[in-house]
Length: 175
Image (cartoon, rainbow, N blue to C red; front, side, top):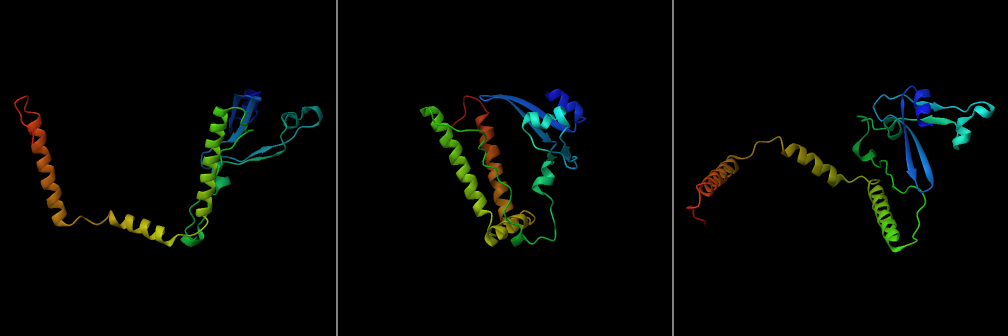
């Protein structure tokens, strides 16, 4: 089935088959490359409707850059550029039949809760964070002061001398 779908799509989408506890799982996705085409899923007529047999509705598969809108728009002010796209990573049915599975589910739920907290924090503009980013970007462009360069050179010379003493053999001494 996966091979037939790849052929019908002219290799413009990824088709993956994975074995799960519920049975085989078919995953259809558009390529994640920038400029990938939008793939339209259309239903067939009568008994020739593969979408209906797979339990899918007609629709479109969009590439990631179009879904997430990862364009850098220079007209957007930093205080208006808040939010983002977050995924909870909870797929399929979760159960807690035994202790080991319950611990695994607890880990998944902890991760999902952390994601919700990050998403909530990303909805407010933080001017202090923006200022720190700006200062960090500007700090790397200025040369270090002369006294700091001299101190670093002295430390490097001392390190080279110590390394030379350790390589002189068994008759060397330790400080």
